Length: 417
Figure 1: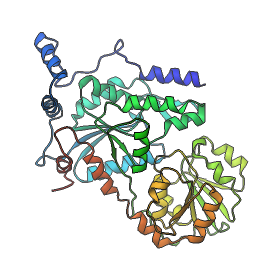
Figure 2 (figure 1 turned 90 degrees about the vertical axis):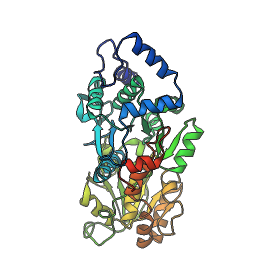
Figure 3 (figure 1 turned 120 degrees about the vertical axis):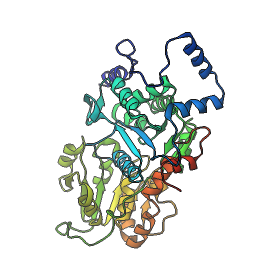
Figure 4 (figure 1 turned 30 degrees about the horizontal axis):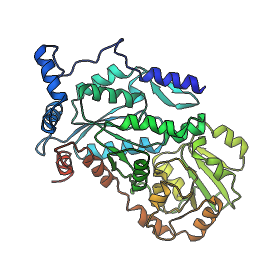
């Protein structure tokens, strides 16, 4: 299976020059001696020449124009339900709310096949030509590549061939996931990721801890892009939703897959009830193995928020997430977090007041202590430190190119005066 999967990825990400050419852009070089000479000068030009090229290629905006035009290329998109999709969708909502334009390039734009052993993830087939046309037609001010799959690689290839600057972000520990599923060596996985991200203007990561870890793994030019929570939806309050369940209620929200270590939670000897919100490839197996647990499927919006606020403790057993947006949603709902002391929970609960959660290698003890110490007001207050608007401003400031500081980008995005 691993051999077939590797061959599939290689086939999806190979250079299709022999099959198709990228559609021309308005500034594509003409095949003349003069143009070739200019191209050579651009390749060896000074920083000032590179800055001029960036202005010409992107028609760089200014504060008098109507906001930024930003491309976000992602292999993770609806109908997938996960933190990456929610983060990118919310980012777009905030940016457009300020008067910017966002073009998502997603698997929904291409023919695709299900990823082996993970059918809800779609692998786009031959995205190069159409992705290039979408970018050319949109004429962006900035390009951000959110994932390292076929679409991310296609847009990265486009940018490198045209010498367009771009940024990337690191959302998912694919090396650890691949090791969990297929025993693919973790060091090989990170070598592949370093190669993917190395030519971007910046790699955006969610926390300072993740930034330090990636620097230790040899990644460079890392910048922080935090995550946020919608406090209008996720908030504490009374609800009868779990009144028929034995108390206390321990809740998990997220994808039901082996890399999330959900069985670490379900196997615990805990009082009350265990509720699992979400779906995924391991759901059927775990439902059969743990018949006392309550699996309710995927929930969205206000329905999801009600499930959070009805719980007594939120349990986050994953060791592989880079952040864990669900932890903030739980805190905003007045529910403390029980988790392992790993990146994500460690960063989120740093400087939190007592009553917001407990981190321990003994997950059962973390659950029981979080229940005993629960402080609804402290949870809500801590969640207010994670604002989506502040996160969106941070994202925009990270679009910085040589010669343009973050204030330039924020003014262009109409996010500061």
